[in-house]
Length: 257
Length: 296
Image 1: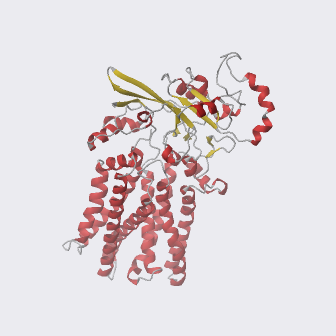
Image 2: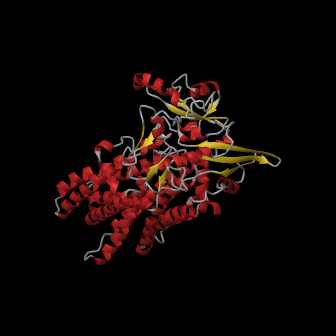
Image 3: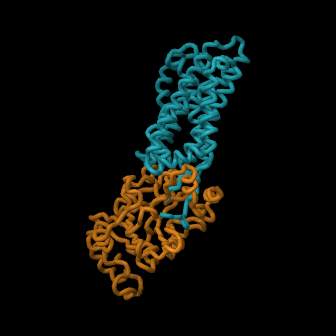
């Protein structure tokens, strides 16, 4: 299994660009072992490699058929400094697949659960009553109402793909190999080696949700949203100084202020 | 260092105005129910004339409350999923709440029947079981917020208590208005002492609510960055400051305390109506100020 999930390393496209065909026999042999040991799928996002191309967000939308104006995963962009010393930074955002997920805690009908076999937080759309409690409870703002399905929706690490041994669509789409997906508990996986050898952070560790999306070189100004100043009024304005997203009515209103 | 967000994806607020309305209706219902049990369970005979109207109002509001809740669902026809035992989520306040919202109106109806047939002993026993239900049916809404760690504005141990006291407050205020109307159309007028008691109760709970608010502000002002911004944001929100605090709490408190106005029925009615409006604004600001603080 670990071989399958090794992102296009070494001989890129050597096996037809799929990266998994050579792993097939291997996975059959380890099927029994898989049943015993639960997996913990996780993602490592290397901010140093991210070029801000938004391929991951687009791949996500087309893979999961996310309606226009809604995003399961996206890229947040910030700019630091003033001309001529300016830097652009990008933070790849998605569901953090917490080990202690606040959304599963509040769901009244168990429509969203953390799968025991691999730690992925998935939605059961047929159960969801659309009460919106999980959307309010997610500290990462990763959930939204899907206007076509009329239920809550979120990134599920492309559950259908990873169940078949593929990688999530965003990982396959990333041109700079900034995204690494794998099993946190498998010492042979590239993800495990990355986690072991690189200083990584998670978003909002203080909440105790134990997210499984790890960031390399994601600095505070990228992860945070609040800037400090002495003036109360200015601080509030600063806080709301975001570029509004074109179709979220909430931000249309906020943008005018 | 100068930083600015170039682009980001925020998500829309999932709840509409039905949610604060729902909290408001269950609060009014629980408040008037507890007032109704003052005479039937706790034996304060002065409140006897209010027992039946209070219970009926509390039942009618309870019919409205779930309607609001179901209207807000994106899949309204799946509301029964919350009552399927296999789907029950033991960590979710909403799971408990939906069961309470089913059981409590039934218990309430039985209770009304026994007041109606004037069976004091059974009313008393039923009331004793229904009072905790009434308390929990409203306290759970406070827990639904208090258990959300993502939003500093909600994640406070004060929430359930604050929700309960303001529920009582709105219930009493509503009953004052009802009693004033009853007083006009009854053969024998209600005692002046009844109104004095109701007024004193409102003053006490208003002071308690102000105390909750004060502790809330202080803890948020020295809280995490999120909490700090929440409270600053709230202080800049006109609906919160002028609506909830000034016209919903301070003005009624002054009216109910000043010797000039406190014994006047018109002023009492004005204060009660202000309180009824203020408690709705409290629900509204709890829900929507919480959502206004961006998370990503």
